[in-house]
Image (cartoon, rainbow, N blue to C red):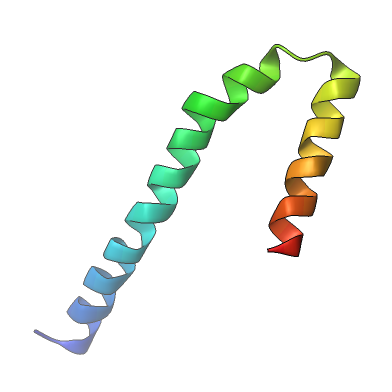
Amino acid sequence: MTLSAGLVLTSTLLCAPVTDFVFTYAVVVMPGLARLADKEFIRAFQVTDEVIQNN
């Protein structure tokens, strides 16, 4: 296996979990957030952002 083929394979394998996370977020979290009023929606994102930045 050449270096470039190895890098492509590694990149593909590392992108798969990120794709799964984004898809799961879009299917599970966003429909729930869509039910909130605008002010609650913004607050939910602010709280989520705080948790992400603190961990």
